[in-house]
Each structure stands twice: as structure tokens, then as C-alpha cells.
Image (cartoon, rainbow, N blue to C red):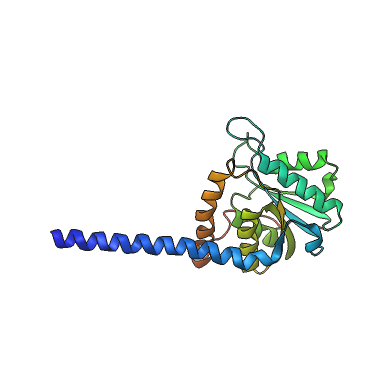
Amino acid sequence: MKKIIKNLFKAFLLLLVAGILFIIWANYSIKTSSNPYISYKTEDLPEAKTALLLGTSKSLNNGFPNAYFYNRIYAAVELYKTGKIQYIIVSGDNSRKDYNEPEDMQLALMEHGIPQNKIFLDFAGFRTLDSVVRAKEIFGQTKLIIVSQKFHNERAVFLARQNGMEAYGYNAADVNKYAGFKTNMREYLAKTKAYWDLIFGVEPKFGGDKVLIP
């Protein structure tokens, strides 16, 4: 019995070490492969017809404004006003009637002068994988600039390029390290999950009719 327990413990340790190594490798691989295509400067990016603005909540659980949300809005507006893009796909979560990331972002963009007819809404962007694949499969975009914070763009650009897209990332300003600590910790696992999804061929949760962007 003791030998069985000892062998089980060894197997558990081996799996634990393998899991940790996989997390480290996945994060390193995604960062190094996507970093040449992302930037904090618009002048570093090529022109593209469309930007993909990745959704997030307008407010935090405590009711305070979400800096991630507003920084992404400012970045998308800057990208549009510098002429790098002509249209913006806003992709986010609308799984509940009282929660609508795409519409919140659309209103914020319009408040900053982006015409409504330049904004397309994707209500089924429940995950980053869904958002980038749907930008290609539903909205017909094979070249785009993704707008989010750097840690998120690394994963999004990686996924887009793995799915045959010419993707670049415009990094919105991050929040301070203390406020974003939990988000950055979750990102380590999210990058690992991105590789897992690729290995097992995970697809977006929803399809839908094609949407024509002029």
C-alpha cells in the first residue's frame, strides 16, 4: 500500500512539474511570437481597413469605472483619427440582457466622434478566440489591427495569426500594476488555454450570418 501511495505521489509531482513547464513555455512562446506585431505607437503599424476592439466591462464590480475599458476606447479612437483604420469591429460579451459590452463600447466610441456607420458589433465575442476567429469567418477580415492592452494583444494576435490572419496589435495604456495584478495573473493561464484550444481545435461558440464591411 505504501508503495502504491509513493508511486501515486511521484506521478502527481511529475504532472505538476509538467503543467508548470507547459505554462511557462506557452507564455514565453506566445509573447515572443507576437511581440514583433504589436506596438504602443500607431506609426509602427501598417494601415488596415478594420480594427478589432476587444470588449471588457465598462464598470468594475465595485461600481467604479474600468480603466481597461476606457483606455481601449481611447486607443481605438486614436487609431481611427490617425487614419490607420476605417472601421471598427467591437467584439464582446452580451450573454445577459443587462450586460452588453459591444453596445457600451459603441456608445463610448460615438461620444468620441466615431460615426455609428463605421462601427460593427459582434455580440458573440465571449472569448478572445471567438472574437478573432469571428472577425475572419463572420466579418470577412483577414487583415486587421487588434486593440487591447499589451498582455491581451499578445494572445489575440497569436491566435489570429494561427488562424491565418495578418494581425497586428495596438496596445492601449495599461492600468497600474496593483490594480491589474489579478488580471495579469489570470493571463498566464489564459495564454496556456490558448495553446490548449489550438491543439484540440476548439472553435467559436456561435456562428452566424456573414456581415459585409464595405
